[in-house]
Length: 246
Image 1 (cartoon, rainbow, N blue to C red):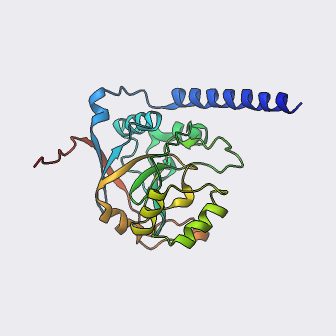
Image 2: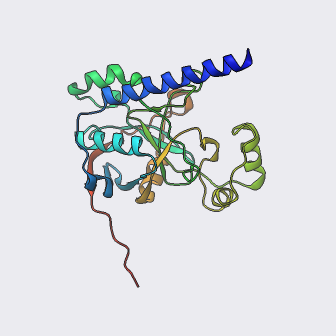
Image 3: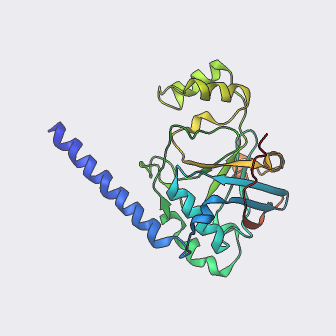
């Protein structure tokens, strides 16, 4: 009996994953991604300054989805709608953009998901780019929102606080030693590890992330919405800066 139940659960999970993949194919912008696009960085030109991002090749579904949205102009005019200091800044909600061409996306935003792409080497250190999602109660496969993302500001943790995170938030799963050291010295949001997909990181402009994270908001009751509207004015694909060899 137990074996049959486990088998049926695997079958259900498989088909849910297939449905999620079909949603991605059905609702992503019909934009061609070229090989050279994947070798470029992204500039978010915001009302507060420029943030430069680099996408991870380890998460190809999220990478290509983000590139398609960017090339379609989706993020131009989108607001950072949720900001929590020492945690993260979030954007990508189509309802924050008053463009009439987004009516379809607005109506289907909750259906547009990307299958989770958790990778052991990608964790919630300060400055990473990750995908927002709905909660486990309605989203047991932890599929990502098709459009909403966040950038981690984070904070530093002590050994005791990391122990508490492992017990209470990670359900006993231990953080790798290197990750713990990073969280203790530079910071991040370890409570989100392997629960939300990390798919890139900031390569320059963390001072802009910090500036946005420090803006006054409506607070938790008001959804942590910035009092001042902070927008992504424009997004660009730009050539990666080469490291100077010695």
